[in-house]
Image (cartoon, rainbow, N blue to C red; front, side, top):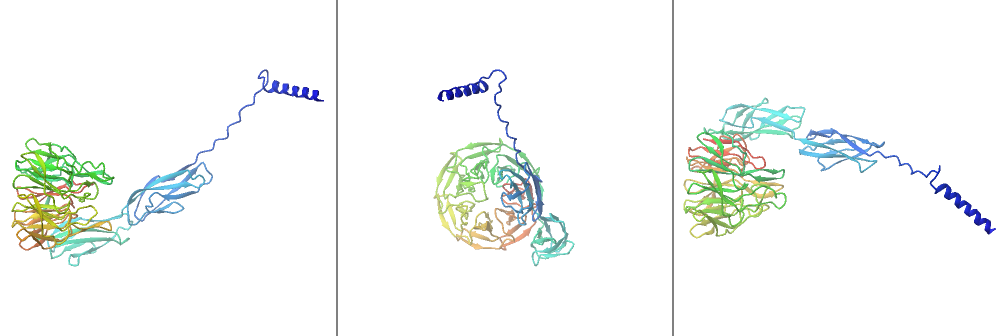
Length: 562
């Protein structure tokens, strides 16, 4: 029994080896299993791939899911800029524009499969032409309006101010008999929340602004320095470094009043905006501080610079000199009677909202041209940037307003620097806090202070003032004076040869003159364009050169006032 079992087992093993393991003859080896059929990948295609729509409008998006029988998708927005329903109908926001907003369609059968499209929301614009105009009292002017983004382009006309004149249904305006600044308004019939306006200056003044040759380079927050030969050096300035912040430029150019044109001169050694430029007693120009390239303004803020350089008009070149004791921007530089230059305050970070620059300094220093060196001098009682510094007729310097931090409210305090002692002493406070204001020394020795920011950020906005006040060195006190016709910040105030003060720009194309004898502001001709952070230079021929303005979108245009 056992013996037969062993024989049977041996035979079975032999058969198995001969058939399956020998590899000779006609014996076939088992083949590898066939690969499984490949599954098609899932692709979601969205149409249209990119488009634009006006505020409040709609766009129908469609999605096709390749590789799936289930064509259902889930729609979503990247930034919730508008809304999109379950059928792919996108509705743009009514009160905002921009983009592109990314539309995403996600396959419900394969949630890893997504398709995208982009939509840009365009603003609905009501534009009035002319956008700004200067008229004599009672003069008639025809206005027209264009409506972009609505099928119904009809408008109704009105004048914002009760005493601002009258306008017909056809846009025929009759100027007010009273001088002032007024607004002609066009309102969309289809959407009354959409309006456009024109600024009308009604004045009896014969003075006016007229365009002159454009600068070679757009500039804002630059410096403009009249040289001893009458030409004006335009140096540095701000430009868009990226979508979020500003950066400086190195270019410089000269304006020739005789030809009314600009020519290129040497380049600065460093990119600068919100810097200072001071005409020295030997005719050279000292440029110092400011912000540079804007490379770090999305992080902690673009650091201010301590470097300085000298422009030599004879050679048309810039040469670096010793550094200031610290970095400064949004500071002031004042030429003293002894030939030295007083630097006061300044901020340490920039790149974002002008004219506010990080955290301020209370320090000051002097540049001595004979020694070509910077040395520290007395410190102020308060840290400041965005302030003003005015050389008084007694040789002392009035430091007024400013702010100590980007997030803090402006200051109303003022201080006097005495070159004889090198110290600052407190003097009377202004009626209201101010930063980004303007100051002008009057012929009688008083100082006119105008406009500026008078609050910190409230609901994302700074408070701006139209008020003005006078500083009297004899009493060391301030007193209010007439009020400007509009609110202004980062504007200019220029003493004219006739003793009046030209106040221009600061968020408006308008201008007005201050008469010290009456304490009143009188409307004068409007500029060709709105300007903020521009320069205004009194030329030797009595005209005022108004140039540039802006930071991320600076202007190259220039005007003459006479």
